[in-house]
Length: 263
Ligand SMILES: *[C@@H]1O[C@H](CO)[C@@H](O)[C@H](O)[C@H]1NC(C)=O
Ligand SMILES: *[C@@H]1O[C@H](CO)[C@@H](O)[C@H](O)[C@H]1NC(C)=O
Ligand SMILES: *[C@@H]1O[C@H](CO)[C@@H](O)[C@H](O)[C@H]1NC(C)=O
Image (cartoon, rainbow, N blue to C red; front, side, top):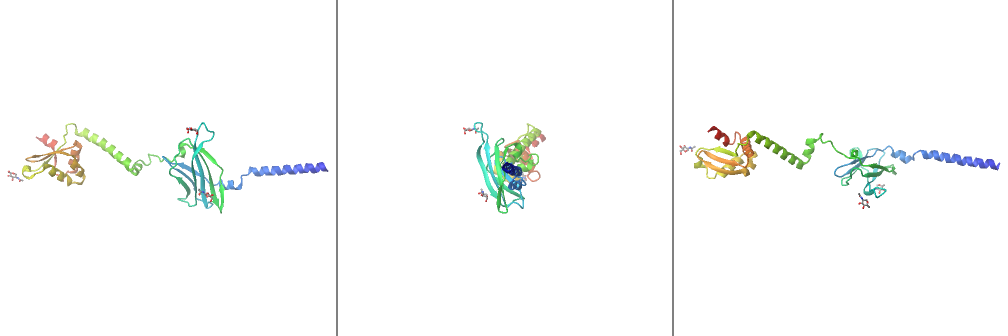
């Protein structure tokens, strides 16, 4: 009888252990709950990290505890020298989003994080996740999609690009005009000697009349008086071409090279 009771007790203990073991196979409720939330991590260049999960009626507050470390061969663990610990309870754009604009993260570093969700006043934490920073974590808009728009966003880049195009165009124009072209212009003006007192002032006044030629006022090198008009030497052949082009029809000016060819 005693032996029977002992065996019975052992059997009961065994069944108890088995039941408990079976329970442990199932995830705890809070982890089952947390598994339905997908967390996205995105790294920006030159700095910034964004962590978000989709807006859900189950989330009263979303929180993140994230650490970033670099691998160091002399240490077993990465050196966790950056962290982002924050909560948000306000969804934006359909997301619960946490952003750190200043954190700099490089490829091959390690990110370790867990997130938390508050639901019906109860805060649940996820397990810790760990990942190596690879290229796909970086937000890199494809340049070919927004080539000109990206440039427009950046005034400085736009100016550099404009200057580069201007140089290319100028070289092409000079190729066409040829090396024999001069920087001289001529304002034909009957009896100029009787009427023009200050030739520089005369030329600058004429240029100033046309909006696009105002900057050219500073590119006048010399002026001279002839009986039939006023001559000008501009700083460059291009300056001369610009005056001829923008002054066409309104500014009574001719290319001095053309006068020379006629005679
Ligand atoms: C690795 O850690 C050692 C000791 O903390 C430090 O002196 C060294 O600069 C670290 N190396 C790198 C690559 O960070
Ligand atoms: C986030 O919320 C939890 C729960 O209310 C709180 O314990 C924790 O301190 C908060 N963290 C931050 C950074 O505010
Ligand atoms: C220019 O001068 C000549 C002679 O000096 C004169 O005959 C002529 O009328 C003048 N023309 C103008 C436009 O002033």
